Structures are given as C-alpha cells and as structure tokens.
Amino acid sequence: MDKNNYTEINSKVFDRLAAEGWEWSVPVSHEDYVRAKNGDWNVLLTPVKYVPKYWLGDLRNRKILGLASGGGQQMPIFSALGASCTVLDYSDRQLESERLVAERENYEIEIIKADMTKKLPFQDFCFDIIFHPVSNCFIEDVLYVWKECYRVLKHGGLLLSGLDNGLNFLFDDIENQPLTVTNKLPYNPLKNDGQYKKLMEEGDCIQFSHTLEEQIGGQLKAGFLLLDLYEDYNNTGALKDYAPAFIATLAEKP
Image 1 (cartoon, rainbow, N blue to C red):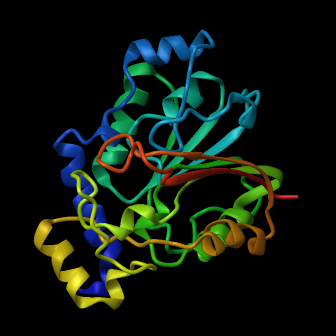
Image 2: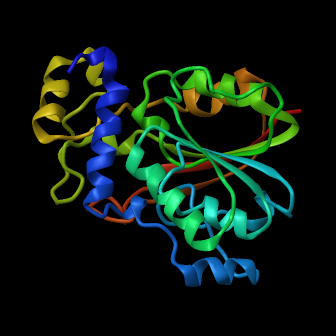
C-alpha cells in the first residue's frame, strides 16, 4: 500500500488487533459501568497510571470528545458520569466496541469514523473536554492535531493527552533483554525505506516518535496553557521497570 495512505494501513491493523482481543480493544464490563455510575471509576491516558480525577472534575452535562479513543474503555465511563460523549476513531472495530457498550447500557453517544490527520468534522467551540489517549504516535504531523483540538474546544476547555516520549522507538524489540539500540530518533518510517519494509513485513502499524517540542511545545504553539503533567511506564516488556516512556498532559484553552 502507498506510504501516503499510511493512516489507512493503521486503520486495518487496528481492526485486526481488535478482532484478536488487543488489550486496548476490550470494552468495559457491565459491572465497571455500574460502578462508575456509583462513583467508583478510573480511566487511562497512558498504560499504567490512572488519570487524576481532579483533571476531569464534575462531568455532568459536559461535552467530551474522545479523540482516537475508540474501544469502549473511556467513553462508557464518562457517559455513566453524566457527560455527553462523542468518539472519533479510524478503526471500524474500535468504534463497534463503542456501539456495543452503548447499546448494552442504553446510553447515547455520537460515533464518528474519521482520520485525525484531516480537519476534524466539528464546528468551532464544540467541546468542553478532549480526551486523547496515546495515539498520536500513529500520525506524522502532531502540531496539526493540536491546532484542530484548539479550534473545536470551547474557551476554558481542557485537553487531556497521552504522549509517547520516544524511548520505545530506540529499540526494535522492547519485549526482551538485552535491549539493543537500533534506531535513531526521530523514528519516521515514511522517510526510511528499511523501517517501512520491516513494519509491512511484520504486519505492524506505521508509527512515529515525536519530540517534546512537538508534543508539549506544539500544544503551547497551538495556544494551550499547560496545567499539569505526569510520567508513566510501559505495562509490559523489558523496558517497563527502567524508565518512563509516556507523559500525560493537562492543558487548557484560555
């Protein structure tokens, strides 16, 4: 498939992973949903640490966009807490999980299939909160997404993002020791034929490392104010006990 259509490649890979029971495709249970309605809940932006509840506050009647957040893991919790939810993803299977949970629990959610590298299909000033779990490692241009997030948020709106800090991309194999540095950063297989070929042969997603200038500096350039952040680790593999590989950020549109 043409490199220019790399988001189509990723969409099909995520469909396959979801069909195979990938951990980020397993929706919350009915019991999880009921617990959330009773005030007992947690959500993830990154693999291990839960998002501080004060980052979200009272969600009743708040409009939330789950950006590249399909899979039925966060939006059902926010719906149980009284939010009006929209989820955007580019994987049919991930969105089907959202649909199945919504039907099971009898709540309304707007489900949209779209590519976040394109203009988001929303008017300006639509949302109170954007919840964006680790996913921009699957797109090349991060700054464009931050600008679109800024556009569709209301003034005073919040952007919660899970970010890969690039450490995982130094290694071709992060599951086993010894860890051997094999890649230079930034990692961009669209500019490296060998890396692209390897990903295609392995049936993997097209992924990209991004600098903190792109990830956090990009939010600031788009106009956001950074309010808080924390670091997190991988939940599997040889690297998980050695160094944080993720950052979660809370930013506000002033």
